[in-house]
Length: 95
Image 1: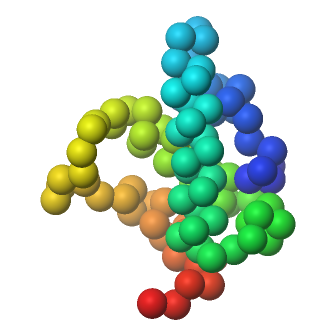
Image 2: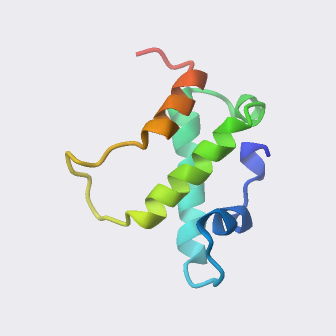
């Protein structure tokens, strides 16, 4: 699946959510996750769509956002190591 094709329905299926109570929040999380992947990797949306494993990263990030709804970032807040590894493989941002 292409990253740009992920919809709220795929996100809800991934999270095993059956109701529509959190749909607007999930829409925002999905947008934020896609933007995070693009900014982290430096890839254009078109190039990111060629890498199917980035779709998994997006869904995993949405899951992290949903499961860890917090209002602040602390020193203990970390990126999922698997997501970080996937994103690092495709990153063209060299710091």
